[in-house]
Length: 92
Image 1: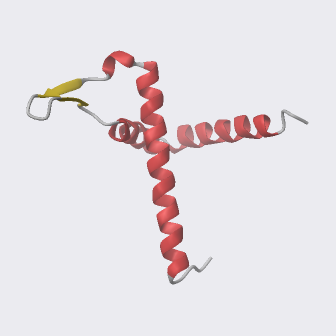
Image 2: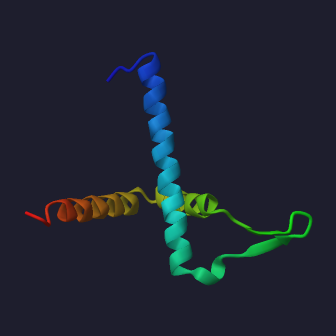
């Protein structure tokens, strides 16, 4: 597959966007399962409480662990595709 010009840029932008959304979703899932690991810090100057690790960083650490084990990553992607496929055809 040869992609050139603006189509190549758009394809790469879509892949990066998909990876970002996937990592944020994994981070949210982690925080839902482990709510006590949501460490926060207080910024006295701005009077704001913020997360120590963002949901993106938490999801990125999970994805990098899974990328080290390709078989586990493929199993998870396949299970998600099966789940989505079952949901789409549930109304028939």
